[in-house]
Length: 391
Image (tube, rainbow, N blue to C red; front, side):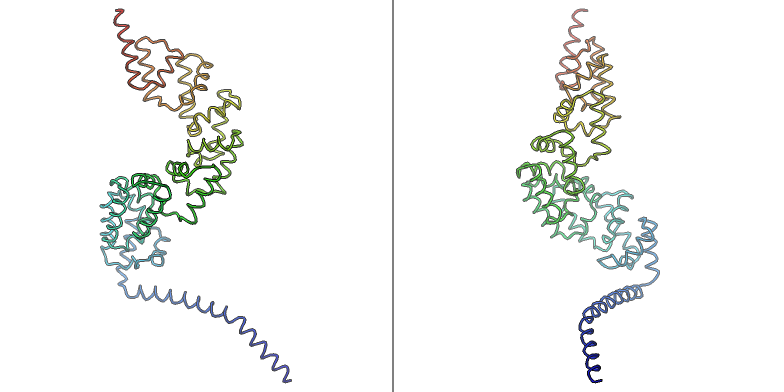
């Protein structure tokens, strides 16, 4: 009997020792949640309910907050519950920020809905932060407004964190102050990316995959810094592999193409790249070698819209020469001929040439497309003088 009692006591002791840490953690979490709820309840209890209701109505009616968003404001606010601010405080803060950044109604709504905590910040702290960004990046008012509309989270970052990130970017990409300003203006979200978790791993992968020097890597990022936010596994790696296979490119040729046209990273294979290559090859009756040559000569071809650019431009050349085969030969030899505006350049020049009696042949079309404005004016004036001399 005594043995059974001792055994039972031993089992209780072991069980308690094993479960006690889990029990303590559960009790701590339970108390934490309970304490948080009681704090929120006390916080609200100490505030006039009419103030809370007024601010809820203001956020809902003036700033377009949804019911779900209103319910999370109290818990998510880091700088004091904005619902308990004195009546008129939120409106004053919104008007101050709206005037400081010259924002429209929709723009201020977008910013505050994205980052309600801004309403809990004092005007002087907001102003010092905005002034620092503007001075550090040499931004005019338009670029400053664009930066905060694109990445409103920057407003709640501390000045120290922003300064640290800007200094790191400037050193990492070998930039002067103007270069840093252009980089951030192109992609304000770069300030929000983690150097260790996002930027550095992407840079290392790009440099290795494309065999880039530090200078080449810096130029790629300066052209399109938004690629730093793309997934390597889901976007960049499969896209480069697909392009290399589809166009039979060597590593060196692929690297050169990406360096020339970094926008390729932002194009969908299924919706943009594949249809564009198929159209070019089918419509122009290209061999694989001719297609590869055209795209290598002008990678931006893959960014042109078929229906609004490629097709109407080709039709213009066909109509100008009166011969489809000659027009197709023209664009194959001169892929960049697809890059000029029909309305601002090609059509007006063709009309000028026809009005002075020029013969629209292959050479004349080349001049229409590629001559600078000064050279084109000289050509037109010479033709006019020649015609007038005969008269």
